[in-house]
Image (cartoon, rainbow, N blue to C red):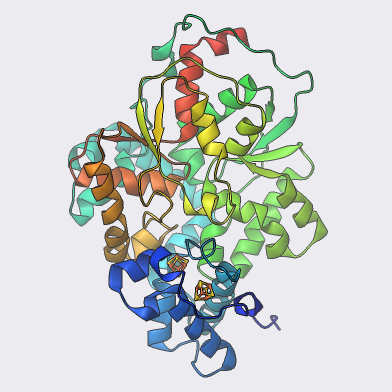
Length: 422
Ligand code: SF4
Ligand code: SF4
């Protein structure tokens, strides 16, 4: 029999309400039951058996939670909202399974023989240019915009278009010991964001790491875990653990959502081996920041950084992506109001609840549209955020690109001729 879900992380809640202004769904609906405090009351009622796990209203408000954990850092009592939500969603999953669409999507992500050909088709479709042409504000147009946003900041051009060493850029010495890094490839990142993997590899090597490829790895399981399907998440985590073993000093992730769960494999699997694995996981920005990183050539760009929730709130990685972009001379970096708030992507949330996902995104797009000077690029380190924000910008008719921070550093290094030294 499965262990009873553990809601003890919610114990410190004193119902002060400080978390309410940080909650995107509360800001969108103004309904207390869509706030962290309201949801904690519902989860407590579930724990005590006062509400059943198949209660429609309970499920509605817990399903509407983005799981962004924006409520955690602002809580003065240190409530572990994310752990409580995990427990509640596990209960809901046991009672009612998954809605048909979620079941279909998560089933595909569980099996590489399904998701890999599917994303390959998506990439072929992307190459026709049709998604870019049809990107817009309607539901289909928004979906097209999401796919179009996966092309990459170079717009599909080879990085070689930035060739030519910038004057005055003296290469700094590499460290004598070169730590080994195993690259976590993932599913969406490995298929639609291959250019980010390539940039990750090049920038890590330029900063003295040896990058290793690890065969046999699978999807991280974060989507399954967020949906309450713990068994599926554990099965995927066990495969990754077996694949990675002790292959390297670090495991590098460039997707914030995957990184948050990989770091938490110890909690998910409850073994020392998983704990040790989690301790070796780093976001790519952490690895690069730990090495400086080396400065590249100037890029004249106005960049707004938007923090992925699973990097900022779940992993508490705040400065590393900024340090990475500050290694690019003349790049003007800004944090716009609300840059710490969820964009509405939240794994498969934007597919299951498109209306709320769009409502949550709206503020961010309005802020970007009103910014002066207007950013040329929004940088963010998570595939879902790149797609959601990219589609939102296109739907609003804004000529602002989206890019992973390592893409920017990569272009700067390429321009500086740093890859010619290797
Ligand atoms: S979660 Fe924290 S901030 Fe929110 S009501 Fe409870 S104690 Fe207050
Ligand atoms: S996780 Fe995000 S959406 Fe859910 S209650 Fe907390 S702030 Fe609100």
